[in-house]
Length: 214
Ligand SMILES: C[S@@+](CC[C@H](N)C(=O)[O-])C[C@H]1O[C@@H](n2cnc3c(N)ncnc32)[C@H](O)[C@@H]1O
Image: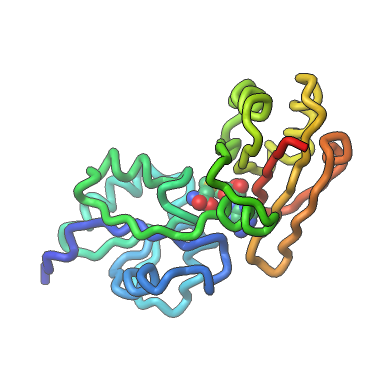
């Protein structure tokens, strides 16, 4: 049976990883899903949801076509980590499916949690993502040079040590680096270092880096 609420694709922010950070509104929508789309990691958060589960990893093109086809008859819910409007599939989904055909439920971003973890406000910070992007180091150097606080999403290639090396190579020294690893998860670690010490930092998992002027 086709019900009218099934027209919109619901994009739900699942927060940084711990289920307690997922909002009741997000859970309400996840519970109503006929089809739940997300990474393996996010789908694992909902073993008891009675919905068809579809993995979204490197198959975005195929998946967006399927979502477009499903959405007229099924309630499709797409899970994204953190907040949907902060460096996620949302930009592509709203473009490809149409903004008016999507409903976005916010989540707590890893960036919010990182700033909370180091006890700093983020209303005067600027942000960038090195997640899956190797070509943005000129932008990083510019931001760190000009701004007092820079929050950076990283990945396994663009690590805190690599970021520190790039900044030092460009003559930037007088900064603090906060490395916020696996926030909200059992192996959470938050540490602070100067850029030279940061060359030796090893991380494993999900990492947000914040760089502040000393
Ligand atoms: C594709 S981006 C998604 C960002 C997400 N939309 C948000 O608001 O947090 C993935 C990156 O977010 C960061 N991240 C996500 N969860 C994290 C966590 N629990 N702890 C630290 N960083 C996290 C990492 O930098 C990771 O590479």
